[in-house]
Amino acid sequence: MISVVILGAGNVATHLFEAFNKTNEASVVQWYNRNLNSIKPFERTVSVTDDLNNLVEADIYILAVSDDAIAKLSSDLPFKNRLIAHTSGSVSIYDLDKKHKRSVLYPLQSFSKEADMDFTNVPICIETIDKKSYPLLKALAVSLGSPTKRINSDQRRVLHLSAVFVNNFTNQLYRIGHEITESEGAEFDLLKPLILETAQKIQNISPYKAQTGPAKRNDKKTIKKHLKSLDNKRHHDIYKLLTQSIRETHGR
Image 1 (cartoon, rainbow, N blue to C red):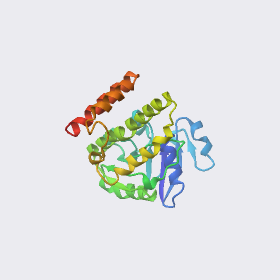
Image 2 (spheres, rainbow, N blue to C red):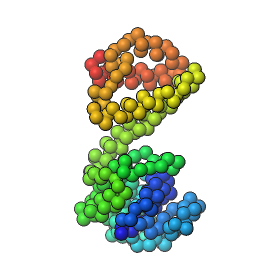
Image 3 (spheres, helix red, strand yellow):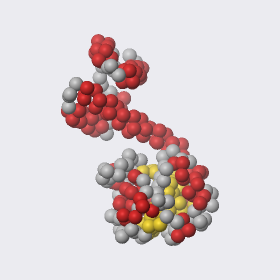
Image 4 (tube, rainbow, N blue to C red):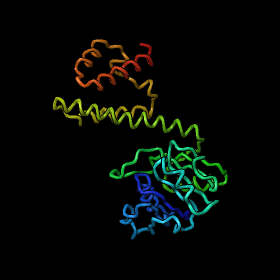
């Protein structure tokens, strides 16, 4: 049984705690957060603390905190030569204090406390400095049912950057679509099958081959009509920018 201490109480920390609670291969032996009220509701399930000096010994300490807090928290830990891992996609492994066995356990997914998470659909990217730490990190990820991938810092950096495009930016486009449909009382729900089909399509073919629409076929009449319909300048500018990007990609 792999013993785990979780530090932090955000979306990732909460989902990791719930996921580890369902496995027989790992156990969360303690949960730390500087604001005890955030984790106090879980105190009947796990030992909770807001004092770093009270941390118990464990196989791994997972720092599931904000990016800006990782370096200081790792430095403040009152021990050395133990395995710690942060969960960030963008923070360097070298931001962790060198007194520790440093690693990264990066779940490549979007987390919201309100939404259930099936970790069998969450790739976990693993990075280590000490090669001897890798088997334990992989075993921990596998205990969740997650697919795992060993990566380096540069690969993690571009994966996180790409994730912003395919998730954060795409979701903002959903929001714009929602605003546009609401402006005329149309139902955004009618677009959901299209959203699902688009996501499903790229499971089998490349995004390049999956591209459709007026920009790819250089339908100038439709593009002009769409731009004329967009009263919101920001929406208008985004439409023009993405249209130009698609045109250039497909040689139009």
